[in-house]
Image 1 (cartoon, rainbow, N blue to C red):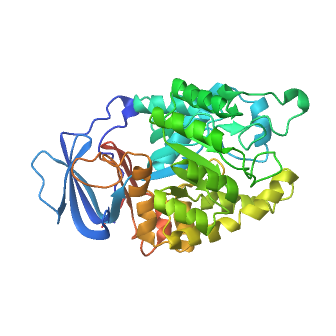
Image 2: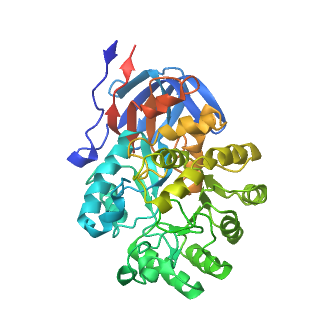
Length: 433
């Protein structure tokens, strides 16, 4: 057995990121996501950062073609995580960080975590809720310019909440520090402030909008379920976001707030803990995606058992909501709700994103469908399915590979061995036969 450690092209960080004019990638297996099936012995031909063709069998290369030998591996499109927080990493001390860290600290952390995410096989992410002074937008721009390695980042900027809501950053403070953050700071009351908040995020360079439609688990506020937006406020957010071509994601655990958000027309429900059949029916009809974040649910459930890790108000919510998320996922999947892969990483550790796959399979989803949720469905949700999400002629060359067959061992997706993004190889640890 020979371990392949060579890199086809230098990373963009070095200024030498372009691959040769043509590259031939041999895949022992290839996950075709649309329609969904596993193909054997496939050749992917690349020119620059685009796929020229996907062909059956191991086709002979031209004399000057570069060859990437993944005959011992299973290839698939670059993975996508629809819910990450690059600048954050939850710990027992996280509630003090706003008083200790500066914007540059968050930016450095986001840069480090972006590279970890890419090395885990995730070539595109939605950064939902950057509460740290625009660090995700800055890191997105740096990645796009080739200054640092990382996935494609679709950034929401700061979440939009209502006063005392899940993303009101002054929750839990003493009265003198309970500032009214206003629309610029992500706290709105009424439809006019809702419109202001969306337009401010557009001005700041955000790609999309995130709202906190209900209470949450980790905020220092009593309820994890109550609805936190009125119908006119939701309409103000969504109608304005549509004017600017910005999708809207809604954090939601509780039933009523979730229902209001789906009726109003959000693109995705994040978490969805208390989702009922009425909501599932509406989501299926409208094509509203569920982003389940099972890894975050499992993580907070486990940490709730550690005395003193969470404030008591948070610990109670974590112990209650965490265990429910798996059951909801199973029911939504069986009902036919569209599901896109998402982890809420930044709660759990960056680079561990792939652990979500095993939880999805545990929750009843077939392994290849879990892969499709993190590829084709991620592309559909982010409106990038004309260029990303599958391996096909004309698509961007985002390719990852694992050593085992995910149908036999879904945990292989926690050990991604090969990562190519935009035609550049960032990781190659495939063991050849």
